[in-house]
Length: 250
Ligand code: PEP
Image (cartoon, rainbow, N blue to C red; front, side, top):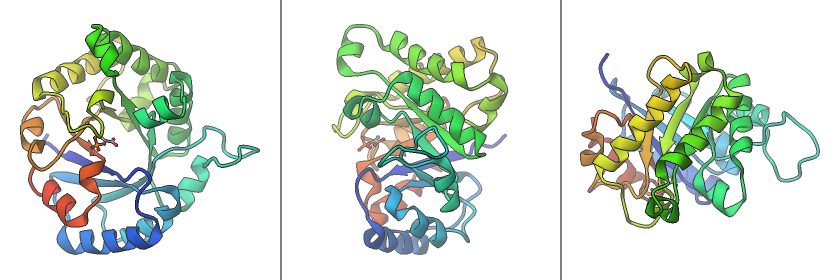
């Protein structure tokens, strides 16, 4: 099977509807569909409808939410339900981004529930895992990543993993300018694959790498066949830069 890379842009708390429209119009003008890549955009919730509407003629572009609640509705002030996300035209959701885990106290169990809720609504969870610097320095990378993967395995049966995408994002590399080496990233990707197969997941679950990816390092990372794409924050915010980056790796 020819390699099909995923380039996912996490805008974090940037680009409200006006900026999101300007980005999307420019990005659409600068890119065209290519058989060897998918382009995923994760705008803030308030911009989902605008972006999803704008890209609806581009089957190579998928839009997703940055976070959801696992319940379909109810008294959860400030939260976003999966059915609300699908109503905007979005077809993916980030689950367990490290900023959600570490700044907002999201637990492994909640990440598993969010992934399961996305699958139930027929959209793709992009499940993020990764260790902190202290955990890496303490030799606990493997233990932490396996624990995070296992929490999702508890809620998502093996046969549903054909519809899951994962991202390995070492916390110490996110927004810091420090990137895992291609070898380090590949090693953790292989560990994740081993843990999935040990638990009955057959088939290749795509695993993206994220953490200070930019135009200067994306090629050396994607040179490793263990990586199925990249999840990018800071370097995805400018439409011209992002279009250039996604044009590099094919
Ligand atoms: C992210 O937000 O998932 C991310 C990887 O951010 P950055 O590329 O800025 O490190």
